[in-house]
Length: 357
Ligand code: NAD
Image (cartoon, rainbow, N blue to C red; front, top):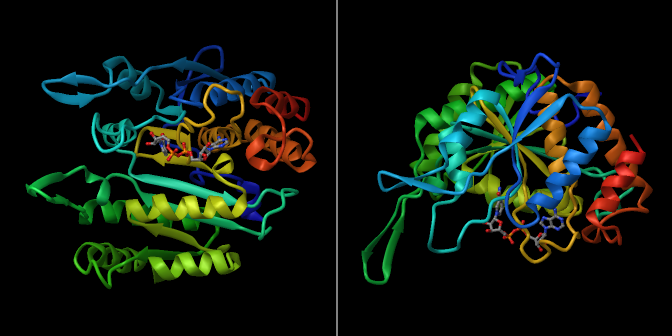
């Protein structure tokens, strides 16, 4: 019941830095609309927040890459906005494949030291999938691993990508996971790893997990191999409903998309990138170039990310009200988007949510 009432919580307590409240009682939140379907789904969030009288003012910023001293960064005013507001909502950002600029998602996570990525994935009541009881919570290390961006050509035809695992980053995300498990009353933490093969890197992550577990005697701790976890979750997700899964970066990226597939796809899964000060909330999905600009996108994932954001800011009543309207609209099944088998356009779905507020 406690988990239910917390909804899509990013942390139990209101964040230490829940945003900056103005004299009008409204919080200013940085908004990165993003690429592809980003502006369309951001519009739905803006419309629904405004109809729900959520006390949020959006400060729209661009994070188009700039180059300073030969290094890629994001514009100073975007950094200043997020630093000032502590909280941001972000649409997807496209990353060129195999060449071009470094992922701006990575740049943002590094710039603001957003070390933990919280990815809850819950079945949507009334929306039929092979399992109707999925309730996984996955915490992904967000700053290193295979995503450290250290790659080079050794000789022609031979390249190396370095998977970087540090004790500091591992301990930080593991401590976050144990604290999170305690906060939401889900008192089992499972580390997912491949230390059988990557004995040193995943081995370090796992040994850090065993150490941190000692500081949380009321939280049960165990570990599972990544391949086994994938097999088990798709065979029967129920045993994962009482656990918080924590894992290195790449595994979290892949496993969370797999979980999304179990509940109806990427249009439904939110996430929070949490740091010590700033936090950025975003959908798990990307910019969906195949459907961009056509009004076909499902804004639910970004909406649920904005619910996580409201929870994080302590605006729980607004979070619950908007969340209830989203779930009611999905359960009615009349006005849902194409990815869920419906015919509604993005804005029609948003209007139906507004009617259900
Ligand atoms: P994607 O998530 O954009 O799309 C995968 C599939 O899911 C597509 O068929 C798409 O139409 C569908 N889909 C995704 N979101 C949807 C939604 N809200 N409603 C309906 N259908 C939806 O993955 P991709 O095609 O591999 O990546 C496209 C771009 O997005 C790439 O440049 C990638 O780097 C980037 N990306 C960004 C983020 C991020 O900003 N956090 C995350 C993942 C991918």
